[in-house]
Image 1: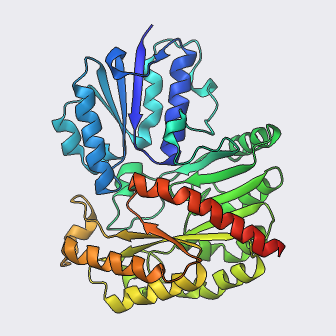
Image 2 (image 1 turned 180 degrees about the horizontal axis):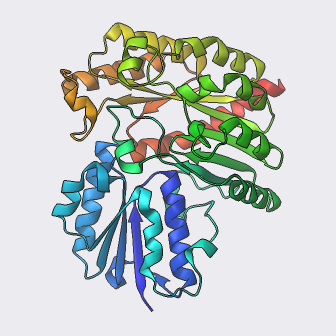
Image 3 (image 1 turned 30 degrees about the horizontal axis):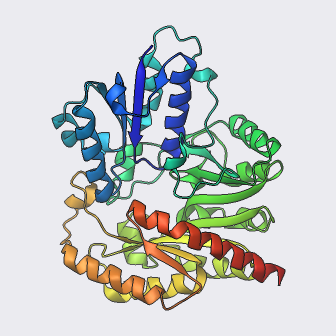
Length: 389
């Protein structure tokens, strides 16, 4: 019987995938051990979307190499910084987009990989920012439909890959039957769902709402929120939908064009404002980028004003440069880190002037994310009170 150990810092969709891998190995007689000392196989899940997590991932791999286990490195970092991974000489390397390759670890399995249902929770309680067994997760797609020149995510996660509609609905139905209170509809680029299989995000959402408990909608690019604005509005009015995350990044049309995004964020203002007014308990979330190459402070101040008037939660991301991204070839002069830090601090201080907004740093700094979970719960309670009052 082989013994295996898993350590990771990957995002929600890939935590769910790691849990499926965990269940597959267990179903075929492998043993998950709590200490890497006893492991025959050491699986390291590596995020590379932010420098803080890239550095953490590298340390995870170094720790794994100090054991006697066979080291398997899996995740986005494999394609974001391949040279760093190769230099550490793991035994096997599985990119995030090729996670099905884990099926090949077992020859002649008793239970095939396809027989293992998709996970709706994480492997262990320690994986959660704030453990809540009444809240479960469904990822509807992986990969991304965009090609933003500055973003390392696409390098790591690859092209859009939507899950089959019937498979998702079966999972929703199951969670509803076992009385789960909330389902988080997740993915890397959820608004693009279905465009690779002849379907759409609003069509899926409509079917989900027919059989689901409460819903949180995550990772919707502003381009898709705008594309589907007419179809989404009545769906968002459904009492089951409690959260809607729209990733705007900036309101500047000039910067959006550089980002290879549609210059439509300003046009979404009235739409999002109408959502706020029509549904008081809907928690609206967004992300913005500060210190983007060539961004003026005036453009950033316009973005801050915009989000301060519309959103309940704002994640402020300082721009990070990755060597393999296309923006390196576009002739920009990049702001020094000291200047980016100054602007990020100013942005956070500005948004803190609005007590009804939960503001925090982006970049997936894990401690920061843990600290926002309880305030977010309080924010939900306030939203519910306003609706009922």
